Image (cartoon, rainbow, N blue to C red; front, side):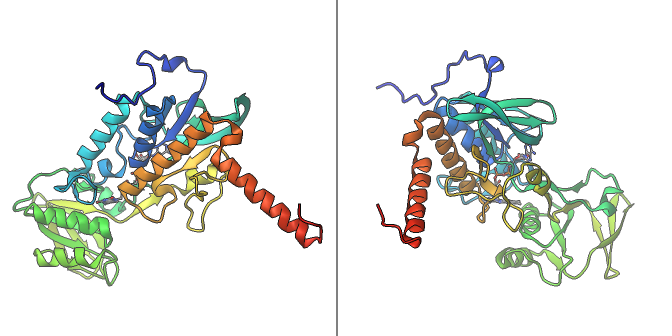
Length: 356
Ligand SMILES: Cc1cc2nc3c(=O)[nH]c(=O)nc-3n(C[C@H](O)[C@H](O)[C@H](O)COP(=O)(O)OP(=O)(O)OC[C@H]3O[C@@H](n4cnc5c(N)ncnc54)[C@H](O)[C@@H]3O)c2cc1C
């Protein structure tokens, strides 16, 4: 029996010559990659715009080396880097097209009609792309929050993401931050035989208590209610002065003190936002602007790779249905019509008119 072949796009399709794309996806993280291979597998021309120079999103940029243990089907875990590389390869094989180092600026409406859609114009810092549907999958965490006191050192031993170092034996590692990312980094360094100090500004770390316990049990020291006030080089190491008057020496400093949010980008898009500044979506992952979907961390309460995948896939399938089904068969439109009809009937009843 022949292998099942999902890709319907022709290998020799002239993507550069397309008048418009069926789908443009913003962000090549887990949500964007999953959405992209789903639309491309269904024969939709798909372009992914990614601000960074590589695909993968947070698993690639923030914890490439961490063993992720909660992905079904990987009982021994998988690194962020490998997971990203595998998903990217699958998207490339499905003929998804990528533009790296390209950041979304805004999404404009046009008057150009294609079947039931008015085309959208996706404007990036480098160009413009016409398309029928847009899927926003750019995550909430754009760039790590920086600590100027450490930036001033201009040191290659200060990291804003978990560094790719196989073995920390005998190395002094200072992790700054009190959240899950900081304690994940501390556990990772301890497992690789580093000596770890965690500097937490708050009186109690906000990270999961089992991670905090794990750090303490593995010999890590947690310094609460203190922060770094000064940093300098001393005898080939980084010397950190803390606000409680103590000092720490470090071979490596890992800073994990949160992220600058994507709110600024969202505000430019003129879509409805939730109270916390994330994107509001309906049950079909569509934003308040028709034809613009949002998936993954950009809106969700549950921030996990598998959830980002699932949402990306669902939005991709809704986009596919809208592009390929006639209006009168479209699930969402039918539901909207039904709700409108019920609404009319309730209004008529309230006005004392007989129900038809
Ligand atoms: C330290 C840490 C550890 C974690 N560990 C786990 C774990 O073990 N298991 C798990 O399931 N989840 C884990 N998570 C959560 C998981 O990584 C996220 O839920 C997931 O990455 C969300 O995927 P996403 O595609 O929505 O967003 P992201 O992964 O953030 O990807 C968004 C992509 O969009 C790009 N982008 C942003 N803005 C623009 C723009 N304007 N234009 C173009 N591109 C843009 C970004 O560069 C990025 O590549 C962890 C998170 C952190 C921070």
